[in-house]
Amino acid sequence: MLDAAEVFAPGARAAIRARIPAQSLEALDTASSISWLEVEHDHWLMDATLAHFGRTRAVACWRQAIATLIERPLLKSFAEPALRLFGRQPGRILQFVPRGWGLAYRDFCAPSFELTGPGRAVIRFEQVAPEAFASVGYLHCWHAICQGVFDLECPRNGRLDFEPDEARARAQATFRWDE
View 1: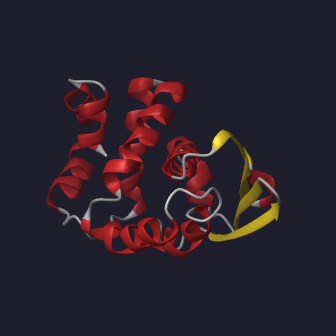
View 2: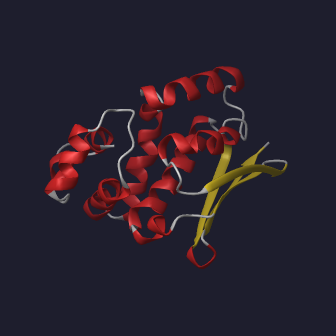
């Protein structure tokens, strides 16, 4: 994500790193590209990015990053066949988000996908871990991920509403597009 932030805004990497505590920065720097970080270190990346850019620009940065992140080893084996098989059909790639979610967010929630009608779909994130709500960056990043994957499908007049619901430990991404 730091690479994506630097592409989005040159100089952002150093500014974001400066907001991350040394112990967590060391964990980020020494982790392999396919390993998970413990939440006490991982959340700093999202929170520092959010603090640096503000909500709107952080979401835009993460959204733009999706096209690059699907080329990384962790997601490439999953994303490449889906894109090849379904191309740019709205709703078709989104259905794979819940299946691949655990590759990036292990044990954070139970996501599901549903086509709810012509030009409509929903991804529900149930049983969202309290840590996702405690760290302000996570849910904004999830919103951006949903938008970035939706962008891959190139929907006509695509719209996304992302609604977190901490009281019920859930969030919902509602997608709409013209058929």
